[in-house]
Length: 183
Image (cartoon, rainbow, N blue to C red):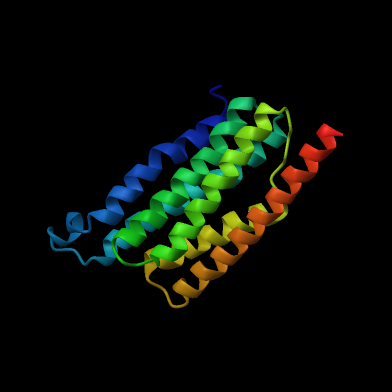
């Protein structure tokens, strides 16, 4: 269980609530005389470090042949915890659209439910390239939102569109695998 990829995924699970707390508590810097931008920098730094572990845990797992069932469970869970912590924190401080975050959360819950059913049925539905693009685009949007950069909201809505598209793609793959299993 405690191989390098799983440890990297667990680090994302650990970093997500820390980043969430920093987003929601800008007074940790402003009360000490620092500009609020230091809050954004720290939250972004934690988010970027955690996001980089997402790339490396998959890479190491494939290269060292350390793909495990627990890894298949905690890796997407860690991704969701990290992105949802950022999105919810940003929404709570008024930096992200509640509708955009709602759509993303509903899609993630729906696909997680489908994955649970797929595992129960013995189906293996691998993440698609569009799902990977969705994750990267969400992470870029979060970075822009955390740093209050121009085009952040446009990137968020682009991420929402790709999130929905990848959800439909996953649903289609699940249906196809399920129908193949039934027949």
